[in-house]
Image 1 (cartoon, rainbow, N blue to C red):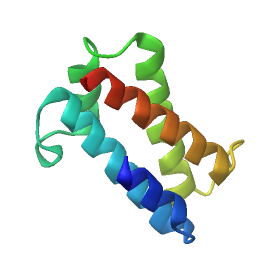
Image 2 (cartoon, helix red, strand yellow):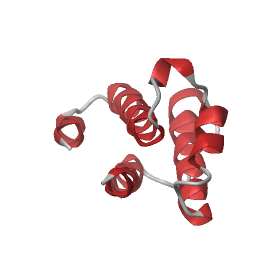
Image 3 (cartoon, rainbow, N blue to C red):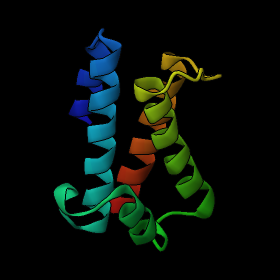
Length: 100
């Protein structure tokens, strides 16, 4: 949760998006009990099938997709950076709540 507060204080959008992706991957790895360095996104999705509801898993995939669009694509997104921050925070807190 402390990492969430640090991310909210950043101002450079590329740094924010990179940190969000890193934090999201670490949070998912924590839930599935593996190192973030040992699994790909697709493997994370498969390993989370029995830990998240299907709509939660869809939100996770969509958030990763939106992060990629913002960082690497020339296509535009309907979401703002603030929208992504809100979804990111909600989703990370949801995933962390599954750990307890």
